[in-house]
Image 1 (cartoon, rainbow, N blue to C red):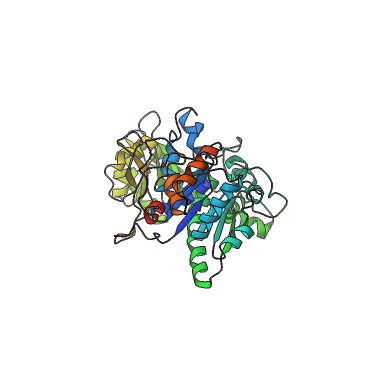
Image 2 (image 1 turned 60 degrees about the vertical axis):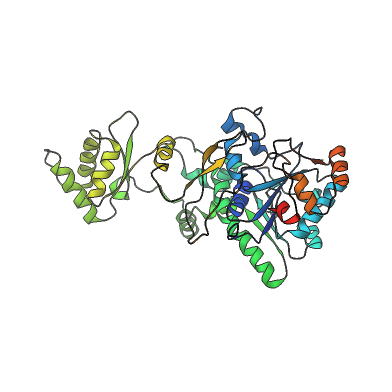
Length: 414
């Protein structure tokens, strides 16, 4: 049995945080041989993402998000600024199909690892750059994170409540990174396929800011045609959707009635459960719905309205979503080993490929440099050379709890 659909692709992963980590996680989950390259002194900051862990002193696998995006990868810790580290990068690139990075513009060139250098080493290499603002233009050198990308991309112009201030998706969501990580893997696979077809590699420069703008859809289209900003869509059943409070201190349901027939059925059902007389106007139907919903549990409401052919959903919090995971058979949740033993539940992907083509969990996320020895052995370094690299600080190998050394080149790369 193969390791997955992409088990013939080798990836040098220079990326970090969500955009790069999630992109290469998708490739790794579906079988690609992903080698995560980072510096011991400047490791992926996602390893200690204090927005989630609350502390940066709990070890290099403390961050739950990193344990997700790092799974199925092997890790090499190397100082790419050192000529000996640069030589290691050359050997890696010569054996790889794809390099993924999301550095600030100019960093890759300072390391002498820009596309021209990579293509010199391997004419078939594909470089996927997940840049914040693209590699050209007046803003290409700007420092950007999730909140600034949502602001400049236009997303924050459509968020917030009423006349309140715009709201960003928070560092726990970081919408631009999540959007990029959905498109990035597809572009990576396309690039590798084209490289193999033509014998020439390419540089794919994906701008997160521009992707956010592209996802604004009808708002951009409306403004480009009329020159005016699109007004907020109507709320309520007339706007096809309404959220009302259910029984409970903070329980809600969302109801959609898209057609006149659906709204009539909703009204008749509500009228049958309420002695008050009224017309079939949307306003009256909404009042009936609001009064009736406050008397029932949100899950009960969802079952009753769905039985009438009305789209209704209980608004679930994160805990309720996880509680339902045990009853779902769609493969969205998987069990992944923990460094100290045992397992934890992680999110997989919202689709399956049959037969036998879905994501697989082959290993947990790695410690910094956990597989340095195996990977360097596969690149032709012997034990003496490896020891010299370790002693000089160019390469780092994680402690004794790391996986055992590989017996051959094939195992080292996998």
